[in-house]
Amino acid sequence: MKQYRDHYFKRAKAEHYPARSVYKLQELDSKFGLLKPGMKVLDLGAAPGSWTLFAAKKVGERGFVLALDIQDTEQQFPANVRFLVHDAFEDSPELLALMEPLLPFDFVMSDMAPKTTGHKFTDQARSLELCERARDVAARRLKPGGFLVVKIFEGPDAKGFKESLRPLFEAVRVFKPKSSRAESKEIFMAGLGFRGGPPEDPGGAALGNGGDLK
Image (cartoon, rainbow, N blue to C red):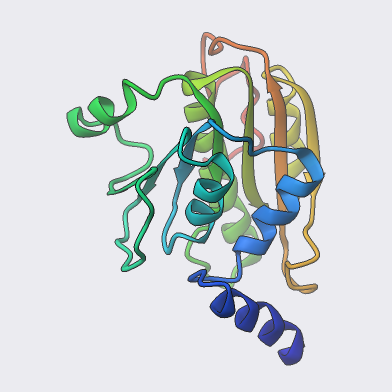
């Protein structure tokens, strides 16, 4: 397993990406055709920046990536990226001003994961909450036909979250990249073909709550 981890770690360094997670997005893109030239992408929880860099490369000079994270990164980004140290779920005048010329986005992506506690059900519940909030952002800011990808920890609530995506997207797919560690409980859910328009009550009955977090 150490050799397995080293392979992706060394490959990422050789290809000038800050983390091995880039290959998960690369596999998702290869599987579902997510990133195309000229797209506008919203990257939630972007640090240290591997997904941002890969997306920027794929969308090209005519595209743009707005990357948000509460943590800063030392990574240098190309001209078609704006990285902002900001809570991805808190609107502010600065964030809204940045978003306005980009709306609606073609693709919202989230590789966010909670700080793990070692307690399986707590970690799963916190992962679910991040996914639900990313879903609600996508429901407000995706264009019709757009895509959403989120990382979620496998658990009893994952199926409910998948069902909550079905009213919003033409298709919902579950995928575990080969570059994920075999023992990892992470999986990715892709919402393909946004139907357009937010539901009346994001996070409520119209979407399903994916499980009780209370």
